[in-house]
Image (tube, rainbow, N blue to C red):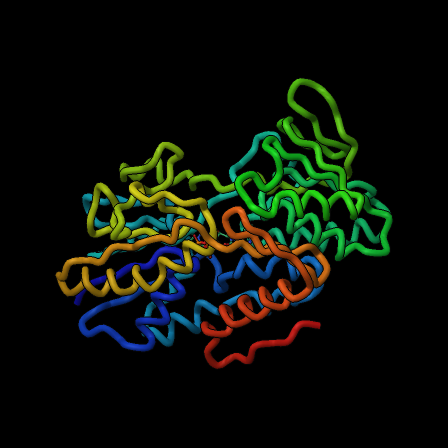
Length: 369
Ligand SMILES: Cc1cc2nc3c(=O)[nH]c(=O)nc-3n(C[C@H](O)[C@H](O)[C@H](O)COP(=O)(O)OP(=O)(O)OC[C@H]3O[C@@H](n4cnc5c(N)ncnc54)[C@H](O)[C@@H]3O)c2cc1C
């Protein structure tokens, strides 16, 4: 028996679990380690916040997917790796042996010392959605007049517009703070700037937010903005446990992998999604690439178990981003091109529902309200 340990139920591991469920591998003991029974499909999270979907609509039952693949499901999280002993240590102190190990644990929202305890972070998704429910209630009771969103990437913009839609009818106002110009590198940036302007959302860029407190945020170089709530969407950071693992990393601390998705220091360790950087073909941390890596990762794990040579992951040079605008309207961004309309939202809705639907086994997909 060979032990294949999957750590994290991210987008790439969904494809791996489905593959092993479709075609079980002989002589392989498969296990999945995840801190939550559910994986959340982030593409639909702004739609949950806006009220178009229920949180169940964007979550995938990892327990059911693991059971179908014949995998042992371990409800715990990885806290470290001892690559020399081929063991993963969990947060509860268990030691899990492996022959082949695969990471798809995503990125963290960082731990900005500046973020007050009561401010929200968009990652991990589950606590963010719970925090949003509480924030929405406070805003509806009139306790929150202004909400500052920190981070001008696609996630920050989508979450801001979704919250604004979810709070339509309340007096809450929003402002976006971004160190860089919003949606830097996206063909859609001008359209999004216009949409934010038309909806009365002020955008402050070029200044870093250095602290968020109960009644406002503070800007680098001085200046304060009154807000009763802050939401951090400041990008993807490497999980802290990687630094202690001794595994090869990129300059930002993410696991360094080759085009075969194997660790640059340990070929028996694979990694995909946000947690990994393909050193020769780096791409932005985005779900699109994690999804595309899934089938290659699944085939390479089988090949590694069979002692065969792995294949290479060839990422596209650009990817399509579909940015929802709170209401059932979205902007498509591909390289320097951009298109927008209610039809873009319907297109995104179909893609997102189809993605989640392919990983539902036994449970019926639910329609949005
Ligand atoms: C609000 C929002 C909207 C977004 N929208 C889009 C979009 O429309 N399109 C797009 O391309 N990208 C989008 N992104 C980015 C996208 O979410 C990420 O790039 C994507 O989720 C990365 O997928 P992944 O497979 O690396 O890991 P994830 O999907 O983040 O999953 C990682 C999993 O690993 C688990 N895990 C974490 N730590 C551990 C541990 N120590 N041990 C075990 N398990 C662990 C987590 O519980 C989680 O289930 C969005 C992000 C946010 C925050």
